[in-house]
Length: 248
Length: 239
Image (cartoon, rainbow over all chains, first blue to last red; front, side, top):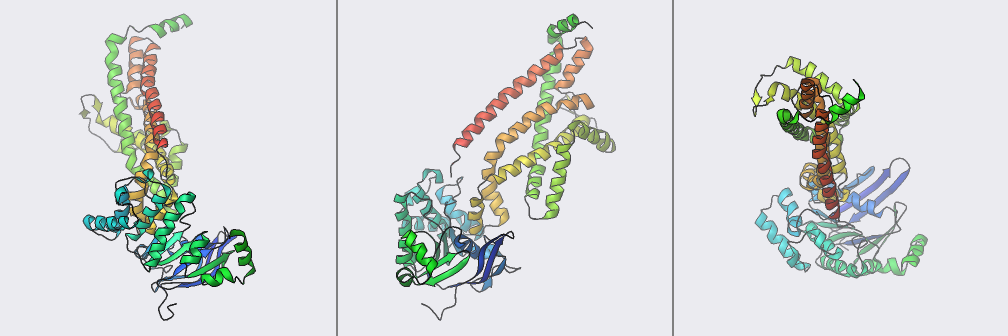
């Protein structure tokens, strides 16, 4: 791995508590380097989504730091909106804007946030739509699309901002089984083109084949952080062995 | 007065041809008054709703206090305070709008109704905004939109769908509630028209019955139409 490169995201002592009773994240440390595909797995409630959502501060850390491209995002004078522009995010439930056409969904943020011209934004959007095979749906509304199509559009929406990192929060969990493949295919393509990705998923096949590192989380802690080969073939953590025996 | 006389008064509509203008003008006045009050309430209500949803404790408190006060006191009391208090200090010229709306009465009436309505409409807006899926906000914020841009471009356009039917209901409420303006201040709306006809003709009940029928003929179909609208909008409500 690129040991000489500086991490694009660095998480230090990240802790998230909800009230006084629930600790969702318990002193997590993590460095993500450019070009890596970090896949986070673990039982539900283990904190993997909270960790991912902390990376772009959709969850505000209780303690600790999230350093993105050298800036501590939880710092006081940080304009979080500026940094979020460079971190794309894809959600389990797509969260497309239902009152806008596909094209408008794609051009809204580039035009509003970055001040890109409509012509330029639409050109970029159409280009990217082509890469996911949905160039003929630009005038459709989200309600007219299948789940798989919606999620591919959601990925393109994030890509239209030309981010440095893509965060995926269980991108295939809400899909009908026959649509999982088309979304994973798009994600594979992204990884192949060198996009830095952090993916929370239950798709072990994707973790094994596409991941450069796989993390296992349980009870708010990162228990295992290993390359996929080692992660799946020689799980040396008893909790991980138990987890894998259930899901594989 | 014997029950027989009352019964006779109930069915004596002989006043109608001569006094119909009281009801026609009255209904126009009522509709203008209520619509103006609700429209005037929209902007302050939106501000109150956004204040209640804001992170600032002070803003939340101010909006919460306003809403609580106006929802927990009778409209008649509010109207009295505004009309006899506030507008005894602010003197308005007696100017006739459309030939039958006296500005010096109309404005205090509208302001009082709007102040009251703003409290209720604010809650309608707040509920409508909260009903928009949180994921919409997260998606917009993750793309780098500011909180204000997210509210304006993503949340409010979707909230309108939740808000419109309830806002129309508020108009129905106003059409009914505005009748106290006639009683208290002598604003010449429908209820005032009925009362004036009753006192002039000494026909006790029938004029009020006519007023009731008119109120019903406006509000009942309106309520049904709103229900139908709500059902249609809910059908399109899929993510």
